[in-house]
Image 1: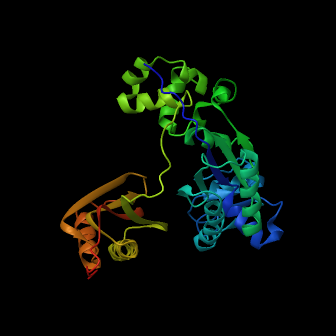
Image 2: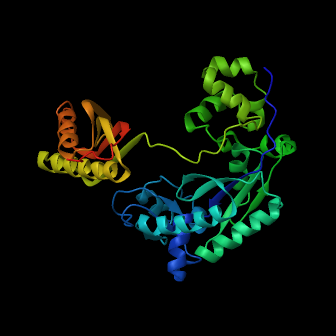
Image 3: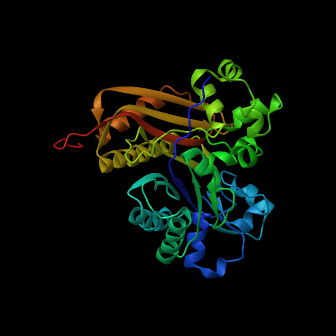
Length: 356
């Protein structure tokens, strides 16, 4: 296979440092120096998972998606706080306004990160990075880490190399010396299952992955993903910045603090989640054609059922009835731990369409 020639772009990946925890520390300076864990309702005696933890808490092995109860066992003296998305979203808007004041092309990829394309700028990488860091700190009082590289893939890897408050620049010449020694989990787009599968064959580093023949990766992982692994392990990524995207779904779910089997509680929860999803649809100006519910029982077995509508809608009654229709197709033989409602097959709502 002939490798594509890397482009001469200048792409920045800006990643806010322990963002949620940093926002909490900013509004309560007494938290500085203490292990801080953000997640759920902020009560480790109840169900919930860690949304983020500051660097002090991470020293104890606490990480995102870990159950709060596990985090408490690892560090009982940690400060546990509930998630405050409104506060985090406000800080997110502030730091992204700084980015847009510096570059015209930005890809918004999450509440705490973004890509910039500064290929057309005459300033040096160091000057641009300093402007970003200074601007964000003045606006929010928070720090960020920046990766600069010829493409999005390398820029994202770079931004994680010198956290917190780091600046890492990579070129194609750095791939062999700085990228290939990294563990394969550092490669964006390579998930836990692929990592486990590769490790079983003795592949531990990105460099070892890059040494695998193209044909082997295609046979093992299929044409699309195999080619991605082949190119990504060599630092090749021609993907453009996406400045506009359309959502593919809206979903809401809830985990009960105590497993339930009461039909009225389950029904009321389905109705409430349906109402929240409809609110999302109407707020964003979409209609949905497919409704799906998810039920997770106390033994962690999860079931989903979907219902297709005759036409796309954002009407609460229609979405709710469809959700209940899906529910009837699941035998509630055990206590329920989690319920979710999701809508897909979205269409833009007509300007004069009524949500009713």
